[in-house]
Length: 475
Image 1 (cartoon, rainbow, N blue to C red):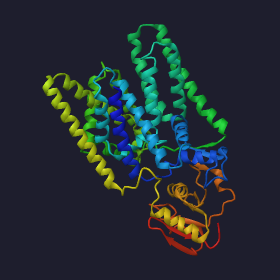
Image 2: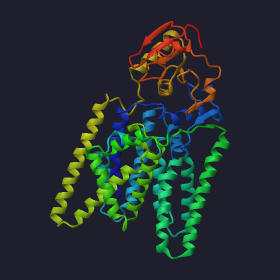
Image 3: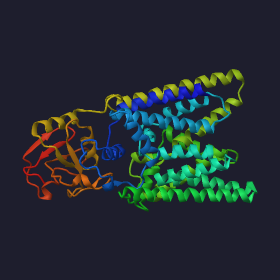
Image 4: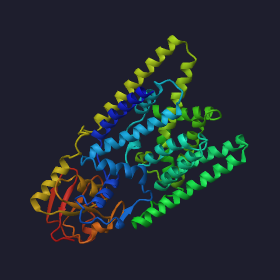
């Protein structure tokens, strides 16, 4: 099984390296990088490092994301390498989850699951392995629950350890509590009738209460110790237009939707005798209901909220293949297995080619440094202006990838500070000398600047993807 795990890990690393080489960093991916730079005084915001003024999202991503990212970040300044190493660890944890679920199955099951995962899921699912995209908690939490949780362990010490770790993860990301811990508790509830042991039922109740208690303590202690600011997204409850758009994305006629609907049916058929199928089905249903009810769905980028789906689809269809192989004669068994691997390898190669063509391949070794980054650096060298404003998506992306000491802070469409995953201190003693405008639909559009009673720019620099408006006087 170790060799099968190693093959799966190499498959994942190769595919993840291609994703890193074709992706573009954005402000969401710079969440933990921004915290790291404040804590350890790394440029360009080395003068504004008070963590007490940092504005976190509702999910702290303390474990595993923050601790893992910080540890890797201390090893190298190459951000692409940090991301690749982080994604590789996440993939290894995912393979450990499948290894736990398919325990006792043939050793080639794990590479089969890895190939199925990458051949079916497109780049929308690559965010499963990104920092601060919710899946870190779900993957690690699921592994902990299935290895050490009350349903699988009679060892009291391990059960309480699982309560502490699950609570820590719950406090790090509230979404994990909804789509990871809650489904497991429902499994415990459905198991109570079969247990017939009041002491075990009482133990399970105490385990659940302890998990919630730890989660609350972690969340509020993090706020108390750091003294930082916290913000919440405001979900649009009852936005049925978003719900219809979400349903349309999932149910449009294509291979993925067919596999998705089929996997749900497979899990339903298996749920009576298969604990994992029951867990994945409950988690998937709760996750979809949460996304629809809260209205957080806006476009395909919100697939990151659907952590259980890729696992549910992969697990269901691999189970079907294993069941089919058991009913075949040995000769046909080998033929079908080899044929399946060939099909999945072709599918994975096709998906990799699609990723390659979607964007010009940069490199997973060095941090991304494109023509727009070079253009901004040249502007700073020529003008000696290094304080600017932009919207959320451009500010950290351009600042953190610049080679020159330029500081760009995010503002709203009225040019007021926009506090979200950044630091209030960054705005102190700051006087904007220029604005990044027209950056991929930037809200600081050229038509809005005059409305804010800003004089016509003294100079305009065209950097292709965006323009730089230089102010006659600093704001």
